[in-house]
Image (cartoon, rainbow, N blue to C red):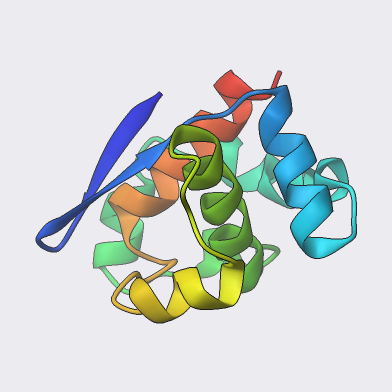
Length: 116
């Protein structure tokens, strides 16, 4: 489990096999297919923050923003049981940028370490 600081709020993330269930129940598809999108980004996490701050989003070309947000929702749902539906969660957390380097790194690491 890890906590990521996004602006003035903290978001708790926890990956486990339960995360896979939460994802499938909410989105009607298997999370494993979405994890494949993380592959290239996960391999280049070192230095990713610097790349994003410099405005170079090339490392993210195969990654969809909504995929990151959906994965974050499932991780947050695993960490805290009282998380609302994805749409309500987005309304509450609309300040989250899926391209925030800290957020991106925390989501990817938690998925890779917690779900496998």
